[in-house]
Image 1 (cartoon, rainbow, N blue to C red):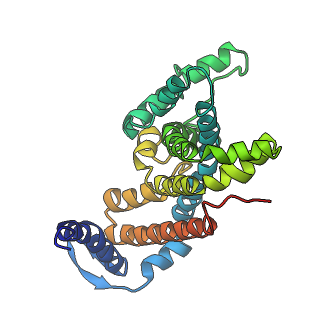
Image 2: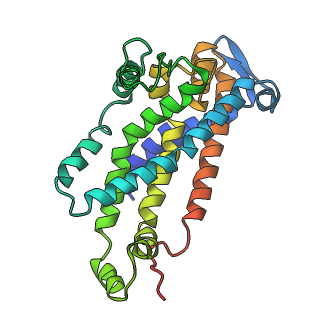
Image 3: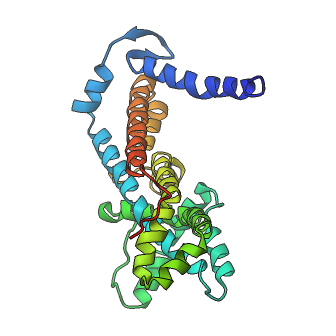
Length: 285
């Protein structure tokens, strides 16, 4: 217990205490220039009835979360390939993973340049191949902005998912596959009856990381679009930042933070329930 005490103190000071202060502040009217005044649920009523940006940010955050399964599915496909007898698999694994250690700011700058309407490599490639006549404003167009940011986010996190799933694949006992082959099970049956059930803990970890990442993608969104155009890429985390540090409404930002934290806990709980049961069990006939 004595060895854990320093870590527990740090966790309390930098995690529990700020969260508790946010909850208290969300029920107050406060600014650095005036004393706090208890106002109850007024911030939450404002959020529910008058803050249109909150609903846009909430919807965009949920879309970010909904895109996580696509990234996980792509990472699973890559993990299956590099776990096979594919020639040069280690090289491909390294190339895919290289995107993850990059700082989000660097990733945002790289993709902002690639999406550029005038000199971006993506528009250049599309026009050179004859697929488009006019350049696409990926980050300036209301319909293209959010998918473009999500794609950049998937590109960065894909390598991390791949390593997690590859580790899970390599921990599956090979005698299970050998027994299934002897019994005449086709490849698709081995995948759905052995691989997926045994990968459930790894998949659950990827889902949780995806949820957390969707709630903390401030750097990438801020660098690429700053929530624009017209709040098309606004997330809860960017709305919290603007409310607190741009509009200096720290009390309202605290209420937004409480809502985001409650949503994060709720989604993680649902994901945990969905991944419940005998995660390591393999169905047998």
